[in-house]
Image 1 (cartoon, rainbow, N blue to C red):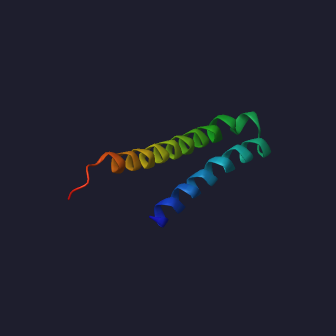
Image 2: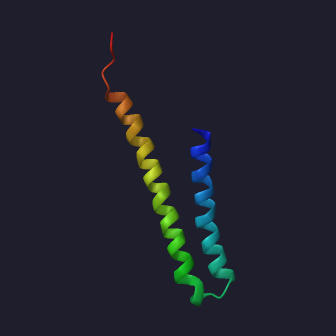
Length: 66
């Protein structure tokens, strides 16, 4: 599970770095290209957190076997 969490942490860092690169770099010329990568990484992080919440919710509602 740690590898999965590390992977999404690196995806988060890639997304943040794209915003910084676009501001420092060529500005408007690179903005569309780098903001696309930011949006894609943000979407992956949202999907990851939703899947975690669904797994936790599913574990709560599963009936306990006796």
